[in-house]
Amino acid sequence: MPHTRLNGLNLYYERAGSGPRLLFISGTGGDLRVTPNVFASPLAKAFDLVAYDQRGLGRTEKPDAPYSMAQYADDAAALMDHLGWDDALVIGVSFGGMVAQELVLRHPSRVQRLVLACTSPGGEGGASFAFHEIEHLKGEDRARFMIPISDTRRDAAWAAANPQDYATFVAMAAADPFADEPGRAAGAHRQLEARAAHDTWDRLPQIACPVLIAAGQFDGIALPATQEKMAARIAGAELQWFKGGHMFMVQDRAAYPAMIAFLNAA
Image (cartoon, rainbow, N blue to C red):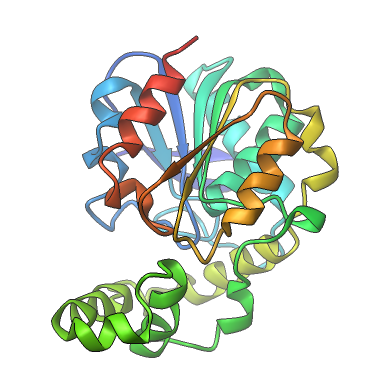
């Protein structure tokens, strides 16, 4: 799969499927080596789908220098240039939704329709959970801390009543096969630094393309109240709720069809 040189770094991306052009922007720590990923989703059967490892992550270069949200957005635009795409449909998930906000604000003509999934605008609109504050937590300690936040239904009472399921979730969330990779820790840290500074709240009214805000009813990372504020801030934005937490896209079978229908509504 291809690398390309853009904005001073080697960026890794993958492409599959056919149909309308769709750029998928992944979340905190996103790494296409971790499977199943978006290419196993219905999106790969409905679109000409491109996804990539963002700067500091996966098989993309990991410079140990400050990153900005503007850089992340410009990386996405530069990848579109490399692909020969003047514009595209865009889905941004979690941190990727923050990048997608910056993308549509900095390069408005490049985004045809936009899905913002389980994300936040920052500022007065509310930020997503402050991952930079728990950077010291690793492995199972981090997994146990995050499980009831990622899905607020999975509290202590649920864990006690479902010990086998809880143990499975802990093991899955704690796994990091690339933890010892050179540059891995530095790149992840730099991403969290940029994420902590994310704030598009005052600029959201500038977004003019059609927007779907997709949210999990039990998400403790991108809070439901924040989704409502964001939807009210973007003219004409649709807000759809799904049964799940931060991972509602794989928890609720209605999520992908709803996103596909929105993206194909043009």
